[in-house]
Length: 117
Image 1: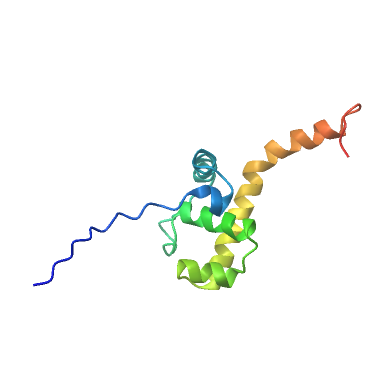
Image 2 (image 1 turned 45 degrees about the horizontal axis):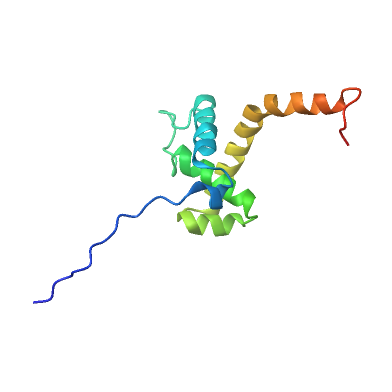
């Protein structure tokens, strides 16, 4: 009789920092903002292939590492068109969420006496 003496270790989720550039708290904050802004699952529509957290993570992965949509689709085992739609939706939502944070900074750089370039 052969017995397996090795115990399988539970798989830990991958850390956010090397994949997205954000630490766990930053990722969670951004995810919460997205969740408050978007209605990800709509009852009258076909269910999405991904939940919001993987959709955000793949969008950040795509941009941080300048990967092709086809490669990201292979990582997530979904079609390239689905990846493209997901990235576009997350990007549009991020622009709306982050714009108020970016505009005051740009205005401050344009203020007289600022050292903006």
